[in-house]
Length: 415
Ligand code: UD1
Image (tube, rainbow, N blue to C red; front, top):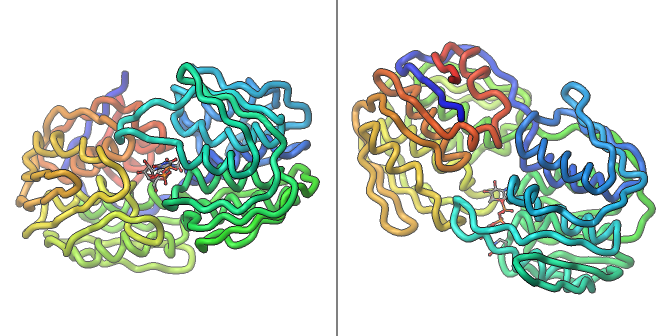
Protein backbone atom coordinates (compact mmCIF):
# COMPACT_ATOMS: atom_id res chain seq x y z
CA UNK A 1 0.00 0.00 0.00
CA UNK A 2 1.96 3.00 -1.24
CA UNK A 3 1.60 6.61 -0.13
CA UNK A 4 3.01 9.75 -1.75
CA UNK A 5 4.67 12.30 0.49
CA UNK A 6 4.61 15.70 -1.18
CA UNK A 7 6.28 18.85 0.17
CA UNK A 8 4.40 21.70 -1.46
CA UNK A 9 5.48 25.11 -2.58
CA UNK A 10 8.29 24.28 -5.01
CA UNK A 11 7.81 25.66 -8.51
CA UNK A 12 8.19 23.20 -11.40
CA UNK A 13 10.78 23.88 -14.09
CA UNK A 14 11.91 21.80 -17.04
CA UNK A 15 10.76 19.45 -19.75
CA UNK A 16 9.04 16.05 -19.60
CA UNK A 17 8.06 13.61 -22.30
CA UNK A 18 4.50 12.34 -21.87
CA UNK A 19 4.07 8.55 -22.10
CA UNK A 20 1.72 6.63 -24.40
CA UNK A 21 -2.02 6.89 -23.85
CA UNK A 22 -3.60 4.33 -21.53
CA UNK A 23 -6.98 4.75 -23.17
CA UNK A 24 -5.46 4.05 -26.60
CA UNK A 25 -3.32 1.14 -25.64
CA UNK A 26 -6.05 -0.87 -23.90
CA UNK A 27 -8.31 -1.23 -27.00
CA UNK A 28 -5.19 -1.61 -29.18
CA UNK A 29 -4.06 -4.58 -27.06
CA UNK A 30 -7.55 -6.07 -27.43
CA UNK A 31 -7.27 -5.51 -31.21
CA UNK A 32 -4.04 -7.55 -31.29
CA UNK A 33 -6.19 -10.60 -30.66
CA UNK A 34 -7.79 -10.16 -34.10
CA UNK A 35 -4.51 -10.52 -36.02
CA UNK A 36 -3.04 -13.97 -36.67
CA UNK A 37 0.53 -12.69 -36.41
CA UNK A 38 2.91 -10.65 -34.32
CA UNK A 39 2.06 -7.09 -33.30
CA UNK A 40 4.66 -4.74 -31.89
CA UNK A 41 3.15 -1.83 -29.96
CA UNK A 42 5.60 1.00 -29.30
CA UNK A 43 5.26 3.76 -26.69
CA UNK A 44 3.29 1.32 -24.55
CA UNK A 45 3.16 2.72 -21.00
CA UNK A 46 4.03 0.53 -18.02
CA UNK A 47 0.77 0.68 -16.09
CA UNK A 48 -1.13 -1.80 -13.96
CA UNK A 49 -4.02 -1.74 -16.50
CA UNK A 50 -1.57 -2.65 -19.29
CA UNK A 51 -0.18 -5.52 -17.20
CA UNK A 52 -3.76 -6.75 -16.65
CA UNK A 53 -4.42 -6.61 -20.42
CA UNK A 54 -1.27 -8.64 -21.13
CA UNK A 55 -2.45 -11.19 -18.51
CA UNK A 56 -5.79 -11.42 -20.30
CA UNK A 57 -4.07 -11.98 -23.66
CA UNK A 58 -1.92 -14.75 -22.13
CA UNK A 59 -5.01 -16.35 -20.61
CA UNK A 60 -6.48 -16.42 -24.11
CA UNK A 61 -3.43 -18.33 -25.40
CA UNK A 62 -1.45 -15.46 -26.91
CA UNK A 63 2.21 -14.66 -26.38
CA UNK A 64 2.37 -11.24 -24.79
CA UNK A 65 5.54 -9.72 -23.40
CA UNK A 66 7.15 -6.40 -22.71
CA UNK A 67 10.34 -5.46 -24.55
CA UNK A 68 11.49 -2.10 -23.21
CA UNK A 69 9.06 0.65 -24.20
CA UNK A 70 7.19 -1.77 -26.49
CA UNK A 71 5.03 -4.83 -26.01
CA UNK A 72 4.93 -7.74 -28.42
CA UNK A 73 1.75 -9.74 -28.82
CA UNK A 74 1.49 -12.86 -30.94
CA UNK A 75 -2.09 -14.03 -31.43
CA UNK A 76 -1.29 -16.64 -34.09
CA UNK A 77 -3.07 -19.40 -32.20
CA UNK A 78 -5.36 -18.24 -29.39
CA UNK A 79 -7.00 -21.05 -27.47
CA UNK A 80 -9.32 -19.38 -24.97
CA UNK A 81 -12.41 -17.19 -24.99
CA UNK A 82 -12.96 -16.65 -21.30
CA UNK A 83 -11.77 -13.73 -19.16
CA UNK A 84 -11.73 -14.94 -15.56
CA UNK A 85 -13.42 -12.95 -12.80
CA UNK A 86 -10.17 -11.97 -11.11
CA UNK A 87 -8.85 -10.28 -14.27
CA UNK A 88 -12.19 -8.59 -14.99
CA UNK A 89 -12.14 -7.19 -11.48
CA UNK A 90 -8.53 -6.03 -11.76
CA UNK A 91 -9.34 -3.85 -14.74
CA UNK A 92 -12.92 -2.76 -15.19
CA UNK A 93 -12.35 -1.68 -18.77
CA UNK A 94 -11.55 -5.31 -19.68
CA UNK A 95 -15.03 -5.42 -21.26
CA UNK A 96 -13.15 -3.91 -24.22
CA UNK A 97 -11.98 -7.48 -24.97
CA UNK A 98 -15.55 -8.64 -25.65
CA UNK A 99 -15.82 -7.65 -29.34
CA UNK A 100 -12.33 -8.90 -30.18
CA UNK A 101 -12.72 -12.29 -28.44
CA UNK A 102 -16.11 -12.89 -30.01
CA UNK A 103 -14.86 -11.79 -33.44
CA UNK A 104 -11.79 -14.01 -33.34
CA UNK A 105 -13.09 -17.04 -31.44
CA UNK A 106 -16.80 -17.08 -32.28
CA UNK A 107 -17.63 -17.04 -28.56
CA UNK A 108 -16.72 -15.08 -25.46
CA UNK A 109 -17.29 -15.40 -21.75
CA UNK A 110 -16.75 -12.58 -19.25
CA UNK A 111 -18.01 -11.81 -15.80
CA UNK A 112 -19.97 -8.55 -15.87
CA UNK A 113 -17.80 -5.64 -14.76
CA UNK A 114 -19.25 -4.38 -11.49
CA UNK A 115 -20.06 -0.84 -10.47
CA UNK A 116 -16.97 1.22 -9.99
CA UNK A 117 -15.61 4.24 -8.24
CA UNK A 118 -17.21 6.56 -10.80
CA UNK A 119 -20.71 5.24 -10.10
CA UNK A 120 -22.56 2.51 -11.98
CA UNK A 121 -20.86 1.80 -15.28
CA UNK A 122 -23.39 0.03 -17.48
CA UNK A 123 -22.41 -1.91 -20.62
CA UNK A 124 -25.82 -1.96 -22.30
CA UNK A 125 -24.51 -0.08 -25.37
CA UNK A 126 -21.64 -2.55 -25.80
CA UNK A 127 -24.12 -5.42 -25.72
CA UNK A 128 -26.59 -3.70 -28.05
CA UNK A 129 -23.77 -3.29 -30.60
CA UNK A 130 -22.80 -6.96 -30.33
CA UNK A 131 -26.46 -7.99 -30.73
CA UNK A 132 -26.86 -5.71 -33.76
CA UNK A 133 -23.92 -7.56 -35.36
CA UNK A 134 -25.75 -10.87 -34.82
CA UNK A 135 -24.04 -11.98 -31.61
CA UNK A 136 -26.20 -13.84 -29.10
CA UNK A 137 -25.69 -12.44 -25.60
CA UNK A 138 -26.77 -14.37 -22.52
CA UNK A 139 -26.50 -12.64 -19.18
CA UNK A 140 -26.47 -15.05 -16.25
CA UNK A 141 -25.13 -15.17 -12.69
CA UNK A 142 -23.21 -11.93 -13.05
CA UNK A 143 -21.55 -13.30 -16.18
CA UNK A 144 -21.88 -12.83 -19.91
CA UNK A 145 -21.76 -15.47 -22.58
CA UNK A 146 -21.70 -14.36 -26.22
CA UNK A 147 -21.58 -16.42 -29.36
CA UNK A 148 -22.35 -16.32 -33.03
CA UNK A 149 -20.90 -15.50 -36.42
CA UNK A 150 -20.98 -11.76 -36.82
CA UNK A 151 -22.24 -9.91 -39.89
CA UNK A 152 -22.08 -6.24 -40.77
CA UNK A 153 -24.93 -4.05 -39.54
CA UNK A 154 -26.05 -0.50 -38.83
CA UNK A 155 -25.31 0.34 -35.21
CA UNK A 156 -26.78 3.49 -33.72
CA UNK A 157 -25.43 4.38 -30.28
CA UNK A 158 -27.87 6.25 -28.05
CA UNK A 159 -24.90 8.16 -26.60
CA UNK A 160 -21.32 8.43 -27.86
CA UNK A 161 -19.75 5.92 -25.46
CA UNK A 162 -16.01 5.55 -25.99
CA UNK A 163 -15.86 1.90 -24.95
CA UNK A 164 -18.99 0.87 -26.88
CA UNK A 165 -17.66 2.56 -30.04
CA UNK A 166 -14.37 0.67 -29.66
CA UNK A 167 -16.06 -2.65 -28.96
CA UNK A 168 -18.32 -2.18 -31.99
CA UNK A 169 -15.29 -1.38 -34.19
CA UNK A 170 -13.38 -4.44 -32.94
CA UNK A 171 -16.33 -6.78 -33.50
CA UNK A 172 -17.20 -5.24 -36.89
CA UNK A 173 -13.68 -5.77 -38.25
CA UNK A 174 -14.14 -9.52 -38.09
CA UNK A 175 -17.82 -9.50 -39.14
CA UNK A 176 -18.71 -10.27 -42.73
CA UNK A 177 -19.97 -7.23 -44.59
CA UNK A 178 -20.17 -3.53 -43.91
CA UNK A 179 -20.94 -1.86 -40.59
CA UNK A 180 -21.86 1.74 -39.90
CA UNK A 181 -21.57 3.08 -36.36
CA UNK A 182 -23.65 6.23 -35.95
CA UNK A 183 -23.27 8.64 -33.00
CA UNK A 184 -19.80 7.19 -32.48
CA UNK A 185 -17.50 8.73 -29.87
CA UNK A 186 -14.98 11.10 -31.46
CA UNK A 187 -12.13 10.85 -28.98
CA UNK A 188 -8.56 10.85 -30.39
CA UNK A 189 -8.08 7.36 -28.93
CA UNK A 190 -10.74 6.08 -31.37
CA UNK A 191 -8.70 7.50 -34.23
CA UNK A 192 -5.64 5.73 -32.82
CA UNK A 193 -7.56 2.45 -32.73
CA UNK A 194 -8.73 2.94 -36.33
CA UNK A 195 -5.16 3.63 -37.47
CA UNK A 196 -3.89 0.51 -35.71
CA UNK A 197 -6.64 -1.70 -37.15
CA UNK A 198 -5.86 -0.40 -40.63
CA UNK A 199 -2.16 -1.20 -40.06
CA UNK A 200 -3.30 -4.80 -39.55
CA UNK A 201 -5.12 -4.79 -42.91
CA UNK A 202 -8.61 -3.74 -41.74
CA UNK A 203 -10.71 -1.14 -43.58
CA UNK A 204 -12.06 1.31 -41.00
CA UNK A 205 -12.91 4.91 -41.86
CA UNK A 206 -14.45 7.97 -40.28
CA UNK A 207 -12.96 7.78 -36.76
CA UNK A 208 -12.85 11.26 -35.27
CA UNK A 209 -16.29 11.96 -36.74
CA UNK A 210 -19.66 10.71 -35.52
CA UNK A 211 -20.02 8.08 -38.25
CA UNK A 212 -17.53 5.23 -38.56
CA UNK A 213 -17.69 2.67 -41.34
CA UNK A 214 -16.05 -0.72 -41.22
CA UNK A 215 -15.68 -3.03 -44.19
CA UNK A 216 -15.47 -6.30 -42.27
CA UNK A 217 -13.93 -9.65 -43.03
CA UNK A 218 -10.63 -8.49 -44.59
CA UNK A 219 -7.78 -10.91 -43.82
CA UNK A 220 -5.63 -9.40 -41.06
CA UNK A 221 -1.93 -9.75 -40.35
CA UNK A 222 0.53 -8.61 -37.67
CA UNK A 223 1.94 -5.11 -37.64
CA UNK A 224 3.91 -2.44 -35.84
CA UNK A 225 2.38 0.69 -34.34
CA UNK A 226 3.26 3.62 -32.07
CA UNK A 227 0.59 4.67 -29.57
CA UNK A 228 -0.30 8.38 -29.32
CA UNK A 229 0.75 10.42 -26.27
CA UNK A 230 -1.55 10.49 -23.25
CA UNK A 231 -3.56 13.73 -23.31
CA UNK A 232 -4.86 13.20 -19.77
CA UNK A 233 -1.39 12.70 -18.34
CA UNK A 234 -0.42 15.89 -20.20
CA UNK A 235 -3.44 17.71 -18.74
CA UNK A 236 -2.41 16.53 -15.26
CA UNK A 237 1.17 17.83 -15.70
CA UNK A 238 -0.12 21.17 -16.98
CA UNK A 239 -2.38 21.35 -13.93
CA UNK A 240 0.60 20.47 -11.71
CA UNK A 241 2.60 23.38 -13.12
CA UNK A 242 -0.36 25.73 -12.75
CA UNK A 243 -0.76 24.65 -9.13
CA UNK A 244 2.92 24.77 -8.12
CA UNK A 245 3.88 27.68 -10.38
CA UNK A 246 6.93 27.69 -12.64
CA UNK A 247 7.40 26.86 -16.29
CA UNK A 248 7.23 23.41 -17.90
CA UNK A 249 7.44 22.00 -21.38
CA UNK A 250 5.68 18.79 -22.39
CA UNK A 251 6.61 16.77 -25.44
CA UNK A 252 5.21 13.54 -26.89
CA UNK A 253 1.62 14.78 -26.98
CA UNK A 254 -0.54 16.47 -29.62
CA UNK A 255 -1.53 19.97 -28.41
CA UNK A 256 -4.75 19.83 -30.45
CA UNK A 257 -6.01 17.08 -28.11
CA UNK A 258 -5.67 19.49 -25.18
CA UNK A 259 -7.17 22.68 -26.54
CA UNK A 260 -10.15 22.81 -24.16
CA UNK A 261 -7.85 22.24 -21.17
CA UNK A 262 -5.28 24.82 -22.22
CA UNK A 263 -8.06 27.35 -22.95
CA UNK A 264 -9.27 27.10 -19.34
CA UNK A 265 -5.73 27.34 -17.94
CA UNK A 266 -5.09 30.45 -20.05
CA UNK A 267 -8.33 31.98 -18.80
CA UNK A 268 -7.15 31.32 -15.23
CA UNK A 269 -4.01 33.35 -15.89
CA UNK A 270 -1.40 30.84 -17.14
CA UNK A 271 0.69 31.54 -20.22
CA UNK A 272 0.32 28.57 -22.56
CA UNK A 273 2.17 28.19 -25.82
CA UNK A 274 1.27 25.26 -28.09
CA UNK A 275 3.81 24.32 -30.73
CA UNK A 276 3.92 21.50 -33.27
CA UNK A 277 5.96 19.23 -31.00
CA UNK A 278 5.49 20.66 -27.52
CA UNK A 279 3.29 22.56 -25.09
CA UNK A 280 4.75 25.10 -22.65
CA UNK A 281 2.95 26.41 -19.62
CA UNK A 282 4.19 29.23 -17.42
CA UNK A 283 2.48 30.32 -14.23
CA UNK A 284 3.99 33.17 -12.22
CA UNK A 285 1.21 34.62 -10.16
CA UNK A 286 -2.08 33.86 -8.42
CA UNK A 287 -4.81 32.37 -10.60
CA UNK A 288 -8.35 33.67 -11.03
CA UNK A 289 -11.68 31.81 -11.26
CA UNK A 290 -12.92 30.88 -14.74
CA UNK A 291 -16.36 30.60 -16.39
CA UNK A 292 -18.20 27.27 -15.86
CA UNK A 293 -16.28 24.15 -16.85
CA UNK A 294 -18.69 21.58 -18.30
CA UNK A 295 -17.39 18.11 -19.07
CA UNK A 296 -18.54 16.72 -22.40
CA UNK A 297 -17.62 14.08 -24.96
CA UNK A 298 -14.64 15.04 -27.13
CA UNK A 299 -13.97 17.70 -28.36
CA UNK A 300 -15.55 19.09 -25.16
CA UNK A 301 -13.74 19.41 -21.85
CA UNK A 302 -12.63 15.88 -20.80
CA UNK A 303 -14.17 14.41 -17.66
CA UNK A 304 -10.76 12.88 -16.89
CA UNK A 305 -9.26 16.36 -16.53
CA UNK A 306 -12.04 17.69 -14.28
CA UNK A 307 -10.44 16.66 -10.97
CA UNK A 308 -6.90 17.90 -11.74
CA UNK A 309 -8.30 21.24 -12.92
CA UNK A 310 -10.49 21.54 -9.82
CA UNK A 311 -7.36 21.07 -7.71
CA UNK A 312 -5.86 24.06 -9.52
CA UNK A 313 -8.94 26.28 -9.15
CA UNK A 314 -9.22 25.46 -5.45
CA UNK A 315 -6.39 27.96 -4.91
CA UNK A 316 -7.47 31.00 -6.90
CA UNK A 317 -9.33 34.26 -6.54
CA UNK A 318 -13.01 34.10 -7.36
CA UNK A 319 -15.32 31.21 -7.96
CA UNK A 320 -15.43 28.42 -10.57
CA UNK A 321 -18.41 26.18 -11.29
CA UNK A 322 -17.84 22.63 -12.55
CA UNK A 323 -20.62 20.59 -14.16
CA UNK A 324 -19.83 16.88 -14.52
CA UNK A 325 -21.95 15.56 -17.38
CA UNK A 326 -20.31 12.19 -18.09
CA UNK A 327 -20.10 10.23 -14.83
CA UNK A 328 -22.34 10.30 -11.75
CA UNK A 329 -19.85 9.98 -8.90
CA UNK A 330 -16.86 11.92 -9.99
CA UNK A 331 -16.41 14.27 -7.07
CA UNK A 332 -14.78 11.93 -4.57
CA UNK A 333 -11.69 14.15 -4.50
CA UNK A 334 -13.76 17.06 -3.13
CA UNK A 335 -13.81 15.96 0.53
CA UNK A 336 -10.07 15.34 0.38
CA UNK A 337 -9.38 18.76 -1.16
CA UNK A 338 -11.51 20.22 1.63
CA UNK A 339 -9.14 18.63 4.18
CA UNK A 340 -6.40 20.69 2.55
CA UNK A 341 -8.37 23.90 3.09
CA UNK A 342 -10.36 24.08 -0.15
CA UNK A 343 -13.89 25.52 -0.11
CA UNK A 344 -16.00 23.44 -2.49
CA UNK A 345 -19.76 22.73 -2.38
CA UNK A 346 -21.26 19.87 -4.40
CA UNK A 347 -24.88 19.56 -5.42
CA UNK A 348 -25.55 16.62 -7.75
CA UNK A 349 -23.55 17.14 -10.92
CA UNK A 350 -22.45 20.65 -9.96
CA UNK A 351 -19.45 21.61 -7.84
CA UNK A 352 -18.88 25.23 -6.90
CA UNK A 353 -15.28 26.01 -6.07
CA UNK A 354 -14.75 29.17 -3.99
CA UNK A 355 -11.08 29.83 -4.52
CA UNK A 356 -8.96 30.30 -1.39
CA UNK A 357 -5.56 32.05 -1.22
CA UNK A 358 -3.72 29.02 0.18
CA UNK A 359 -4.07 25.28 0.76
CA UNK A 360 -2.23 23.39 3.49
CA UNK A 361 -0.78 19.90 3.68
CA UNK A 362 -2.97 17.10 5.10
CA UNK A 363 -3.43 13.33 5.11
CA UNK A 364 -5.67 12.54 2.14
CA UNK A 365 -6.76 9.44 0.29
CA UNK A 366 -7.06 8.77 -3.45
CA UNK A 367 -10.38 7.07 -4.23
CA UNK A 368 -9.97 6.85 -8.00
CA UNK A 369 -7.35 7.40 -10.69
CA UNK A 370 -7.84 11.03 -11.74
CA UNK A 371 -9.13 12.14 -8.34
CA UNK A 372 -5.91 10.73 -6.87
CA UNK A 373 -3.79 12.63 -9.37
CA UNK A 374 -5.74 15.77 -8.47
CA UNK A 375 -4.69 15.42 -4.82
CA UNK A 376 -1.05 15.37 -5.91
CA UNK A 377 -1.70 18.47 -8.05
CA UNK A 378 -3.19 20.28 -5.05
CA UNK A 379 -0.37 19.10 -2.76
CA UNK A 380 2.28 20.60 -5.06
CA UNK A 381 0.75 24.04 -4.54
CA UNK A 382 -0.08 23.63 -0.85
CA UNK A 383 1.94 24.83 2.13
CA UNK A 384 3.65 22.01 4.01
CA UNK A 385 3.53 18.24 3.70
CA UNK A 386 0.71 16.18 2.20
CA UNK A 387 0.44 12.39 2.43
CA UNK A 388 -1.65 10.92 -0.42
CA UNK A 389 -2.57 7.28 0.26
CA UNK A 390 -4.25 4.92 -2.22
CA UNK A 391 -1.49 5.39 -4.80
CA UNK A 392 -2.50 2.11 -6.47
CA UNK A 393 -5.37 4.00 -8.08
CA UNK A 394 -2.91 6.51 -9.55
CA UNK A 395 -0.64 3.70 -10.80
CA UNK A 396 -3.44 2.59 -13.15
CA UNK A 397 -2.84 5.60 -15.36
CA UNK A 398 0.53 7.22 -14.64
CA UNK A 399 3.73 5.38 -15.43
CA UNK A 400 5.89 7.44 -13.11
CA UNK A 401 4.11 10.38 -11.61
CA UNK A 402 6.76 10.82 -8.90
CA UNK A 403 9.64 10.34 -11.37
CA UNK A 404 8.32 12.94 -13.82
CA UNK A 405 7.37 15.47 -11.16
CA UNK A 406 10.71 15.02 -9.34
CA UNK A 407 12.50 15.64 -12.65
CA UNK A 408 10.62 18.95 -12.78
CA UNK A 409 11.83 19.85 -9.29
CA UNK A 410 8.91 18.72 -7.12
CA UNK A 411 9.48 17.13 -3.77
CA UNK A 412 7.48 13.89 -4.02
CA UNK A 413 8.40 10.43 -2.87
CA UNK A 414 6.66 7.11 -2.52
CA UNK A 415 6.74 5.24 0.78
C1 UD1 B 1 -13.62 5.94 -21.38
C2 UD1 B 1 -12.26 6.17 -20.75
C3 UD1 B 1 -12.41 7.00 -19.49
C4 UD1 B 1 -13.17 8.28 -19.78
C5 UD1 B 1 -14.48 8.00 -20.49
C6 UD1 B 1 -15.19 9.26 -20.93
C7 UD1 B 1 -11.07 4.16 -21.40
C8 UD1 B 1 -10.41 2.89 -20.97
N1 UD1 B 1 -11.69 4.87 -20.43
O1 UD1 B 1 -14.39 5.18 -20.45
O2 UD1 B 1 -11.08 7.31 -19.03
O3 UD1 B 1 -13.45 8.94 -18.55
O4 UD1 B 1 -14.23 7.19 -21.66
O5 UD1 B 1 -14.37 10.02 -21.75
O6 UD1 B 1 -10.99 4.54 -22.55
N2 UD1 B 1 -22.57 4.33 -20.72
C9 UD1 B 1 -23.79 3.69 -20.72
N3 UD1 B 1 -23.87 2.46 -21.30
C10 UD1 B 1 -22.81 1.84 -21.86
C11 UD1 B 1 -21.58 2.52 -21.87
C12 UD1 B 1 -21.48 3.76 -21.28
O7 UD1 B 1 -24.78 4.21 -20.20
O8 UD1 B 1 -22.95 0.71 -22.37
C13 UD1 B 1 -22.45 5.66 -20.08
C14 UD1 B 1 -21.47 5.65 -18.91
O9 UD1 B 1 -22.10 5.25 -17.72
C15 UD1 B 1 -21.04 7.10 -18.85
C16 UD1 B 1 -21.07 7.52 -20.33
O10 UD1 B 1 -21.85 6.54 -20.99
O11 UD1 B 1 -21.98 7.85 -18.13
C17 UD1 B 1 -19.72 7.61 -20.98
O12 UD1 B 1 -19.04 6.39 -20.81
P1 UD1 B 1 -18.00 5.83 -21.88
O13 UD1 B 1 -17.74 6.85 -22.92
O14 UD1 B 1 -18.47 4.49 -22.31
O15 UD1 B 1 -16.71 5.69 -20.99
P2 UD1 B 1 -15.72 4.45 -20.95
O16 UD1 B 1 -15.52 3.91 -22.31
O17 UD1 B 1 -16.13 3.53 -19.86
